[in-house]
Image 1 (cartoon, rainbow, N blue to C red):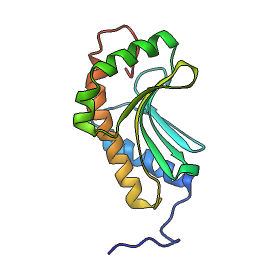
Image 2 (tube, rainbow, N blue to C red):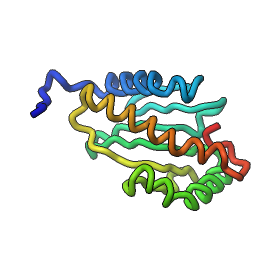
Image 3 (cartoon, rainbow, N blue to C red):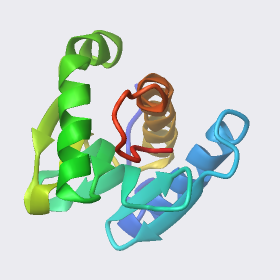
Length: 156
């Protein structure tokens, strides 16, 4: 049985840095040029010029949860087009990623498609699990977003 001690725990900022680095390593061949921003209690990664639409790992310490998914934080009209497109594909997305995946409108007219997982223990095994899961999420969502028939910039 694997146990976690205080010595196995990572501080949140180190956890996020290591998770971003591991995600970069895992995604390097499939998503060359992926850009990363690690700050405070989250990290974002995206393709293209604008970070407005990105994949994200966000630590919700108060809830002891990690949020993983895609955030669309561009202009409201673009976000609504993305929401409508993802909503029509939600059953397929959930069939591939799990029914714990949620699509919702969020603050400022933003949209997010995400799941939450337990934050604890915040250790090297969790780094690997979260990095691999984020890559799996990208592998499912990116082809859909690349073929989106609307003119919103999505994650390109």
